[in-house]
Figure 1 (cartoon, rainbow, N blue to C red):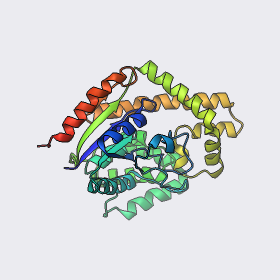
Figure 2 (tube, rainbow, N blue to C red):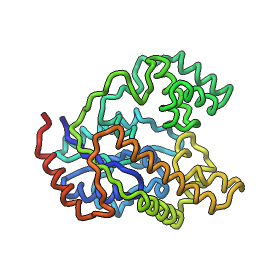
Figure 3 (cartoon, one colour):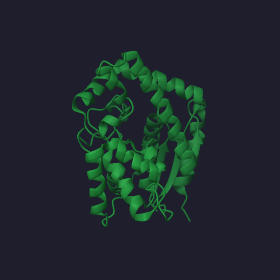
Figure 4 (spheres, rainbow, N blue to C red):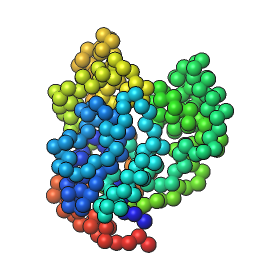
Length: 306
């Protein structure tokens, strides 16, 4: 099995800094596992790594989609695996970094996404329903059938809602919990970064303030004016739409970004704690433990999975 280092965790815990430091020491190349960093022009709100931060380390699946394009977990799964093969063929270590749990899980396991025998009839039925009744009503159908999937999909992301309904109608199982337990495709080491909840929330609040100073509002305004279907859904953008519409103050919108970011961080932590075997580290409060972490990673690299 190919070895892959994976670094996950909520926003503002130091994933970017750790990934670059480890990439330098371990001859690594970084694959973004974030569903929003694929979009061009969305740099600040997605906390995209800057050219300076990259430190000449190759980064993949960043700035590879236009704002108008749809990017699915199936796209990430396919492209991510191709990039892993390329990195390994160069003798380097793939390092997947991100907080989008479903993307990471779909990459590492043989989840069947977008199979060839998709039922066109089912898709057309739900597409037609959405055209007549709207995306919200379509999402409510999904919530009745598969609340777990509905809670993970924004109601305006019609493509994902239809896909989830299609899978449920065809198999009777949620798209998030397939009937057969998926097989692990890689020998991966999963590093989870976390810290004390109060400290994390404070760091998130400060990060949003820093993003505002860097020009987050301009990125949000770009999305507000163009309204691309998928990319407008990212936290840090849609919250400003009521401000642009004159319905809220800038202070109210900014506070909503902070609140939604904190809630998302909590969901991210819950996902990885419940779904995947993760080695948890608090490098915020105990930065010196990075030496111990590095030793564990080196031991894993030198081992062979039986």
